[in-house]
Image 1 (cartoon, rainbow, N blue to C red):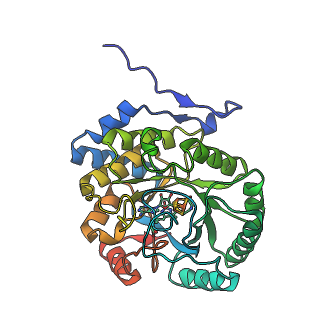
Image 2: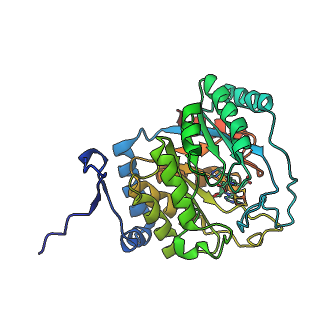
Length: 330
Ligand code: SAM
Ligand code: DTB
Ligand code: SF4
């Protein structure tokens, strides 16, 4: 029998072996998805335990610091000005209110505070206010994250100087399917922002959404696009579509929950050292389904009163779930 060819690895520009990582093909990731469910979860759990404490979960709290009225046409989003949803347009929040919310999140046990804005990207004068928010939240001793849309030259460096730890910008879906969801900016625009974040020395948080009518191949391809980045994201949010009435995707039927768990497992296996975040859609999941996601390698979640405009399970329900499963927050 012929020995299998060694898996290709990505090399840093200086060919430093430290940052070399395995590259994946769509066929290989599809093969993961097609494994018997128990085998897939078992493999994901083994990979998980090689890199992480399997009983520890990182918790981030989100705050929408600028809600609604967004110029973009993302078909899933409650905040696009193009769709008639229940979300009202608001101005950028005052800095004191943001800091007060961060203190509450810290008291409730979140280690990271993530501030989101419904922008195509930040204007320079808005960015200045966000920089102040980052400085003040960082001064509380929390990790900081922002998600502000696409960045222009120089903006990532300013965020880094202000003390930003993570920038969230999702690929959202496979390059092939992307045009069916978003037309006002491209998949390549998103990759460009991720590159700017990475070169400024900020940790990358990037994942996607499933349940938007994409195929399993599209889901596998999205994971390949994330895993094969020159350096995989440190944090990979996997969102289950929250259907928002009034948006083009507002009436879609839910994805099979086992397909969601398979996506978590495939993310864990393809990005072994990344935090895989159980993100949007958690409010509608049973405790048992969430436990299955943790078993499949999810080790991070959003925690608090709400996501950006939609709900989360109550903090008290999450605390009980952690207690019942013997999970620890990190
Ligand atoms: N405007 C910025 C941007 O688009 O990058 C930041 C905020 S945006 C709301 C952040 C991410 O939330 C989106 O990229 C998408 O992955 C996720 N998201 C938004 N609405 C969602 C929904 N209804 N269901 C699931 N995920 C959603
Ligand atoms: C991410 O991947 N999911 C979060 C965060 N990054 C910014 C946002 C989910 C939003 C869900 C819909 C809403 O609450 O508006
Ligand atoms: Fe705007 Fe972000 Fe919503 Fe797209 S996902 S419409 S860019 S807020």
